[in-house]
Amino acid sequence: LIYGASDILNVSFSERGTGDSDLKLGVLFAMSGIGAMIGPLVSDRFTSMSNMKSLQLASVLSICSISLGYLGMGLLSPFVYTCFFSIVRSAGSSAVWINSSVLLQSFSAPEKMGRVLAVDYAFALLTEAFSALLCGFLQDNIGLTAEQVSLVMAGIGAAIFGIWSLYHGMGYGAARKDLNDLLLQEKKENTKNKQSEDTPLLPSAMHI
Image (cartoon, rainbow, N blue to C red; front, side, top):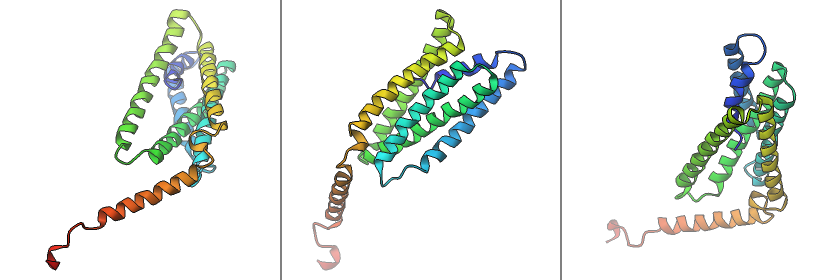
């Protein structure tokens, strides 16, 4: 809900002050790319496929990183700070995308995985477009500055972070205490089903 606003805000921040606005816009997008590379590398050191809870926790904390990025962009106007917090914001965006995608793939049945990921991607694009539209509306129709819009996005992100923190803290989703037992049971059932499928129902032609 807040990712798409960054593209609009980058243009607004690049036009502030003196200097080449095109160059500054390129620098902001470069900072976003650096953050997108750093986020998954950092979260990978604290997550494990054998501990799905860590992936969900990393996703929740990544939302916090996005919110902090917008908060810094809204409170500190100098361009160098805008660059730094662009890295913080995009690092969170990249990490939450990758970790949440891994969770979806891990908990989706193979025959439904394509449809689940397609719906996930569709909603991601929809909310990205909505946040960009909201950002433009707040600036053009309401008259908010880029800093004020950043603070609005930080507030929305904080609300989302709070909801997901509560969800994770109450032991839902990948934070379930009996999750490992459920995954082990499902793995045994899948292995049993595969073995039954591999067992021929009729004798082969060479034995007839």
